[in-house]
Image (cartoon, rainbow, N blue to C red; front, side, top):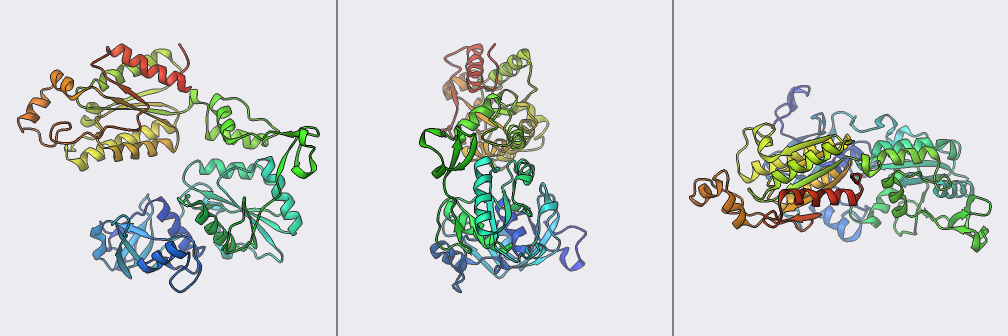
Length: 489
């Protein structure tokens, strides 16, 4: 694929590539100058040095490897246009090194970047700033990097530390692609409770696998924006700016305020609302107590995590051809429609093949693409609060996991394995497919000439050779009722 119109003539013949979510965030921060001294994606030696010792090859401290993965066919080019998911060209990578990741064997490109335009995607993009757009402070600046709303406890600790340091406050919501708009709205909702002059600057930064390196990166980003201190939950060595750990706070049930634990009588300390208990309240649609968080934040929490009975959900059936998954899926759809209260969409494998995936073959690549298409539609249905019922064969574990991730961004996912034995599926063979596969007339047929990877993460396992369809439907309904997604009949 080559770059489209809208680019200078000298760039139109260059290949284009859309990085993944983490790499896109890294690209935006590289182009904005937040990742200085980096000017592009790292090569093999720098990446290895960062992983091993947290430093670039020249000795400069740097917490995480910032690399770009590409398919092998792009490794033969000297320049690559990098674009966002909507196809907007953002930068040209001048390839200085092509290398293979020793852990994944995937191909990587390294080199400096030439900016084409500033990224403009994502919620609240108008609040994002380049470091040079932040007016310098004549005193200390206390940064708080957060992926969660600030509740009354955190607000009190933040005000206390800022007052002690005589610092202005910089709130850096770390955007990960999941409920970003809700996080920023929740922080804007408590702006009046922040110290005067506090600034909120969203930063696109999906979480990495290593929490300690995450903290180091947060400190580097905060320093790039002019912060002199970072509010942190614990001491961490090697940060770009010193972390400040606030003293413990708790809710004083006697005077009904949050304050330092040292100032509260032991028998007046009220147990804090744990994340698990908060999740239970939201799942049940019960109010979040005012002593825990301001009402405006509670409202945003409820929007981001609606009660289960009104939350979008995908019920994904997988199993061999002839296992009975379509029959059970149709029965479940009918039962949910009869109960009312939910919008139900059935994405049956054969129907999808004739419509959404018309023209695809049964090669592994096309079967994966078929499941991704189903997953995309199911995720959109789920995002809008509906119930998506899917019934493809979906033989590959990796593709099923990909669909689970797609759906889980905005709702819930339930996997049902219709584990009817191959012998029974072949005995039924209503369409004559197994007979044709045995005769070699259908290549790559799941269960015969192509594998079916049985799920080890199914929420429910059914064998329709041992139960009538109505009992299988009842078992799925029981699971949904027990999970809180469907009201008891």
